[in-house]
Length: 216
Ligand SMILES: Nc1ncnc2c1ncn2[C@@H]1O[C@H](COP(=O)(O)OP(=O)(O)OP(=O)(O)O)[C@@H](O)[C@H]1O
Image (cartoon, rainbow, N blue to C red; front, side, top):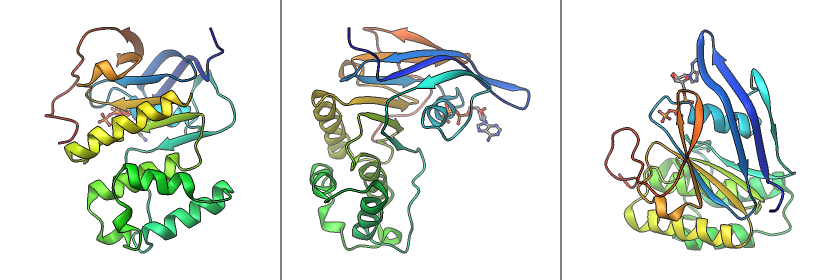
């Protein structure tokens, strides 16, 4: 069995007296498409922010190799800049020789036509496509995606899953966090975050929280 690309051991996190994470353990193999589901407020974003290094746990450890991509739940984009300008900025910060991977993502997610559009003029779903592209364009070995298909129409939602499978088949590890998971068959591993801990789910539908479909 290959060494895990991500290992989480006994992670705890409180906000004041609110003990949100109560001993989270997780090991993610390379080339694995994994999901964490849990109800609103269960602590999914808190966990992902800890995994991405944006939040310090009160206790426990997180280890992963160099390079990860993190797609936050809420887009972090500059409304005054175009799609192309975002790509250029991130190309510089990731130190990429070219934008081949980014342009492939634009094609897969079907928003190449918006390259010269300013973010302020894009729909919420298209902004989310850009958010996702910025997290993936440097082709990291580990991807942490927080509700990545929020606001996607059905076709884009399907394209997202195609993309996730392509990345997994290329050996990337993809961890998707969601308050619902209809397509559990698409995950290699699925965990449920409840009462501050993860439990393994296998072979059964999990629909946590309310809502209709992931595509809205
Ligand atoms: N900065 C903060 N300060 C205080 N409480 C917080 C903070 N961030 C999150 N919380 C609380 O911690 C709990 C977990 O929040 P979190 O956003 O991690 O949940 P979630 O599972 O991602 O929820 P959702 O599905 O609604 O996005 C919630 O009760 C939330 O109100």
